[in-house]
Figure 1 (cartoon, rainbow, N blue to C red):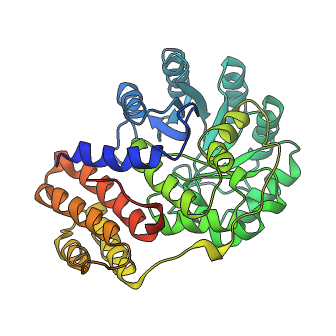
Figure 2 (figure 1 turned 90 degrees about the horizontal axis):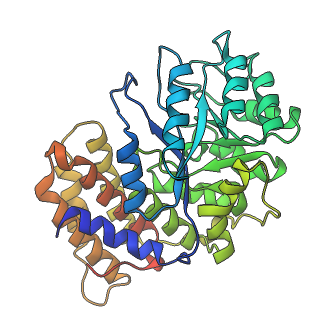
Length: 373
C-alpha cells in the first residue's frame, strides 16, 4: 500500500469525526530557510500540506533566523497576503534585540496577528525585561503570544503565569503541549484564563496528559509544519480528543474556533472542566505495541536503525482471532508491513515516521477504531 495513501486513510478516519463545515486552523507553522538546524520551510509546500489535509489554513511565522527578523517578518506578511486568506501572519522577534519592542509595534501595525517567541533559539527566559512591553502591545492589539515550550529549555511555567496575570487581556499559547511544564501547569491551567496550549508534538502520551488536565477550550490544534505534518498531527490529536470524550463542541473549539477567536482578540465564551485521568483505557498487549513503536520512532528521529523495536512491535500485533481490539492490532500490523521496506530511504523517511506515529496513537486509543486498510 502506498505510504501517502496509507496516511491519508488514517487521516480520513480521524477527519470523519469533525463536521465537514468546520474550518480547521493549524495554530503553529513555519517558513524560512535560515534555521541553523537545517530545516527549510517553503510557503508553497506549507500550502500544499494544508490542502492535502483539507485545512482552512494556518498561523505562520518565520523559523529561526539568527541574522534578525525584520526581513523575515516582512516575508511572512507577504506570504500571508498572497495566500487567499489561508495564512495568518505571526511576527517573530528576539527580545534581547534592542529594537525588539519597536519591531513588534511596526509589525502589529502592518497586519501581523500574533507574536512568536522562542526561549531556546534566542536563549531568554520569561523574566526578560522586554517581555512586559511586548506583552502590553500584544494585549492592546488582541494578538496572542506563542512561546516555544518544548524540549531544550528550563521551566517557564511560573513566568507564563506571571505574564498573563500582570498584563490584562493577554493571551499566551504554550507550544508543544508545554512539555517543559505540563506536569506543573496542566492541573492548574484553569485558574489562569490567559494561558492556552497547542498540540504541536509527536508523543501521544503528552497529548493525552494535556487533554486529561486542561479544559478543552484552552487547547488549540497545531502541527509545527515543516517539523510536523498536518495529516499526521490532525490524526493523533483527533484520536486523543475522541478518547478523552470530547464532544462535537469541544472538537470544534480544539480544531477551529478557539484559535480563530484568539487571533480576533477574543477568548472562548466558556470553559468546561478537563476530563481528568480516568478516561484513559488500555490493554497490556497494545501497551507493548506502543512501547516498541515509540522506540522505533525515537531511533528514526536520531538517525539510528529502528529495525529491532519495529520488529518487536510487529510481533506484538500477532494476536489470536477474537482478541480484544483485534482490528486495531491488524491495522497497525498492516501499516508496519507497508512502511518496513522503506526504512532507510531518505526520501520516504517523513512518511515512514508519520505513519508509525499514527500507529502509536492508535495503540493508546483503541476504542476510537481504525480505518479499513
